Structures are given as structure tokens and as C-alpha cells.
Length: 431
Image (cartoon, rainbow, N blue to C red):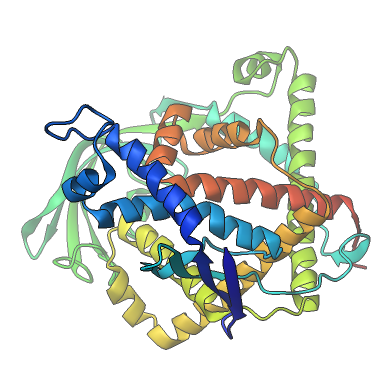
């Protein structure tokens, strides 16, 4: 086998490969023997049809493609390995030809990783705006527990206030016409945290149970229903019942109710652990941003255009899916936000992502950071808890979309490298 290599301006290596006739013939015969075992040809027992008959029956071109599928991966891998190329994608074949002398000529190319030199990444001294839990963090957590375990108690003998819950019947009208979906009976409304039209809940304060009245509001200009947005509306209201929130005491009984705790002290200890972990996670997050910003600023790297275009395409597809899941039109939204400016910002982000991924990959290689057996399984379980799905559903999705497994691998490797950098950096709070 002879190989000629040429590197172009896109950091691609063009490979002109010639496989000698003897090696090509051996591969061709091997494929023919395998295909003969799979093909039924009238007049011949399976596997016994001569090569010429097989070629006539299924076509020489089909056999040649099978030969390529069998020999090229090994050949291209040998070229890449022997030249110590660090590639960013799989090699692609531009064209091939089975020559008259029986040899095989192949023209292929592969894109190389940009060359760069990492700055010193161990022992970095960085400063962060340190996060500290507020002094009343424990009290707020306890208040949240009380709120989540509160009950509603019927109120009699007083008017509503802005912290009450009210059971109401209502019906809305615009220009004298009933609003579609604008009526309900027995609706429980939290007057202190209402997501109704601005001004609606406020007009239900200082009313008595059993009262019936009319209020006037205006739908916001950005309201989702074009037929009524920005219009004045009238709502007929009846207050059926007034209820107030009753908060429980923080005691051992509540501690047992909310978790596997026997006492309030055990509950508070658990909350403190959560607060400490959250504080450290936030400071690690801030340190991570500073570390990678420093590495990106100090790493000289020229990224070739095809890499940027692939990343941009992936980013836009990711954005399209998120936008369309929310019921919006991606193309129209892009026009509204200004195409050129958005493209410029996305290009900058694409370059940053690529540089970061290459830096992570190089550090992982330098420090022999690799995925362990249980890493993927742990990541799948983490995702299942986060999105409320099952391990089996995620595995099914991976089978349908193999790129998802690659993405998970990269996420895990990135997390490991990030932790390595955090562990090997000198982090201090800004004065």
C-alpha cells in the first residue's frame, strides 16, 4: 500500500491511497465468499457459485462497495495512527476506483484537531466573588417547610385581606360578550400570589363571604389571546368562602412528618448540610467560570471554519427545538431578533464551545482522565431523576439517537476535568 498525504488550509489531510492488486484481490475474494453464503442463485448450492456468476447475479459494483466497507476503515485507521494524527471527525472518502491492473485507488480526507499549547493549568491562583448563605437562610428554609405543610381554615365574621384564599364563582365579558374560558365556579384563588389579570385579585380584598359584585380590568397588551389583548373587561364575582392559611409550629412532630427525622435538631442539621453543599456548589460554579475564562484567554488556537459551521448548525438545531417546543416559529423569531447580530453572537459562542471542548480533551489526555464503568449509568440515573423519566426510557432514546451517548460521554469527561481543575487550583475570595 502506498500513501501520499497533503495538508490544506482547512487543517485537513488529503489522503491519496493505493492498495496493491494482490491485497485488493484477497479482500475481493473474501467478500465474494461471504456474499455467496448469503445469496440464493438458481443452479448452485449456497456458497458454491463461482465469482463470475455471483458478479452477474448481484453486480460487481455492489461487491466493490462491500470491499470498500471492509478494507477502508482499517486502512484509514492505519494511516491516521501511523502519522499520529489527532482528528476531530471520521475520515470521508471523496472518490475511489478499482484500476484495470486490479489495484484500488482511494482519495479521502480527515480533519485534524487545531494545534495549540495549553498554558499551565495546575496551581492556578484565582479569585472569586465568594458566595455566603444569608444570615437568615435557616429561618427561610424553616418558613418554607411551614408554608408547604400549612392548612387552609375557613374564616367567618371578617372581610377578606390580601393574604387570604377565596373560593369564588366568576364570569368575564368583553364588549358584552362572554369570554371563552373566562368563567368558573368554586375556583380557589390565592389573593397574595395570583397569576390572574393585573388588578383582578386586588379588587377582591375587603369583601365579605356571600357578596356578589362586578370588577373592571384590562387585559395586557401582550396577552396570548389576540381577540381580547389590550381590551377592557368586566367580571361578575361571587365570593363563596374565605379561607386563611394556618402555619404549623416547628416541632418534633413536624420534623417526623417532613422526613426521616426524630427531632427538630435533626431536621435543622439536615437543612444546614443542604445549605453548606449549596454554598460550596455556587462557589465551585463561580470558580469554574473564572478558571475556563483564564484558560481560554491564555490559549492561542486557530479554529478551522468547518468546525465552526458544524457547531453553529448544532446550536441552531438545539435552539430551534427549544423554541418550537414552546409553540413559537423559529425562523420568524430569528428575524425579529436581528439575524446578523444573532449570527455574530452565536459564532462567538460556537468558537468558545469548541475551544473549551478541545482544552478539556487535551487536559483529560495529559492527566489520563477517563470514563469509568459506572459513569454512564450514574449519569443516566441523574438525568432520570432530573426530568422525572425512567432509566429504560433514556436507554431507548440513546438507541434511537447514538449521538446522545457521545454527548453524555463528553458531559461526564467535562465534569471530571472541571473537578480536577478545581482540586488543583488555589481559589480565594476577592478582597
